[in-house]
Amino acid sequence: MPVDLAVASDGSLYYLARGSSSIFRVQFTGIPPPYLVPEQNGDSAAALTSPMAVRDPFPLTDPFNLSSDSRTRVMLFAINLDLLPSEDKSAVTARAEDAGMIVYPLEVEYVGDVPDFAWLTQVVVILPGNLPSGQSVLVSVTLRGQTSNKVRIRIQ
Image 1: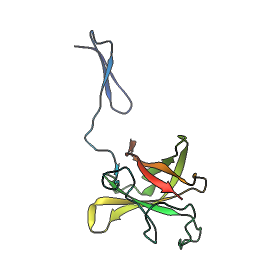
Image 2 (image 1 turned 90 degrees about the horizontal axis):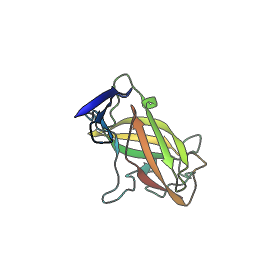
Image 3 (image 1 turned 180 degrees about the vertical axis):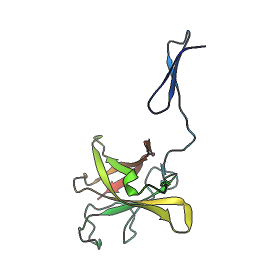
Image 4 (image 1 turned 180 degrees about the horizontal axis):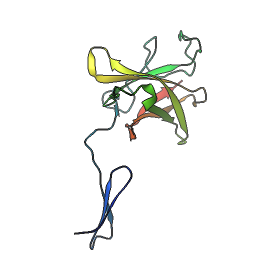
């Protein structure tokens, strides 16, 4: 039986139940969080470098990169990452986490539908030059306060 209720700023309802010695949270889950698509039966990202469409390991500097800044871009694929009409790529943030749990912000360059696959969104991120090479990092994206699963990309 609840004996006290409180509503948090994120809309969650907290309650204390008699005899439970615990605080419980009720949270609205009507909108599923973004989901980065991994390769089948694993946690490696289904991702490509652009424009050459090369799979991992991803170099920090791509010799085939045709951009003027020579920075490597990685194209990730996501589900439940639909932008509202008033939103653009700035509504999405991305980050990478290395084995030492050091977090690296990733610049989001593009967010948009995958042609002919309306249920799938492509997110192009730019890899920072200070990512550790020779290891994997876990990448996630956040939209409207909801963070995706983490997928692994290997850095060359």
